[in-house]
Amino acid sequence: MWNEFKAFALGGNMLDLALGFIIGTAFAGLVNSLAGDVIMQFVAAIFGQQDFTRLTFTLNGSDIRYGAFLTVVINFLLLAVVLFGMVKLLKRIGLNRPAPESRTCPYCKEAVADGAIKCRHCTSDIEEAASA
Image (tube, rainbow, N blue to C red; front, side, top):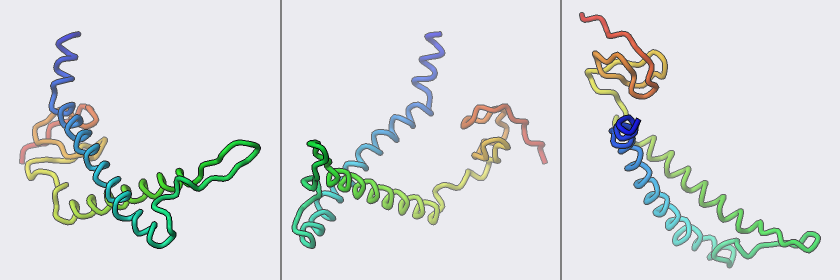
């Protein structure tokens, strides 16, 4: 069991996932800085407040902080727009195309190397491609 765990933890997919998580975290910090330090400054210039966190109303003695929620929604939308733009750009320049020596998994539709008998994405058993 230890050897299986070691193979899993040190396998290429797990390391790729860890690297993606680290880069994603750094990217989220970058977008949050864009939102807080640039875009919200334009909001401050227009509305007179840097952010909306102070916007509240009281209901039955409880403060409802809807302004903080609006700030988080704006940050989320900015992150989503930037990620969408990056995906569109990567698709346009062709970085998501499968390698020439690959085929498509019939189950998950991901690229699989020719000669593979198991999909590395969905772990389904697949038949080897017939040689031409």
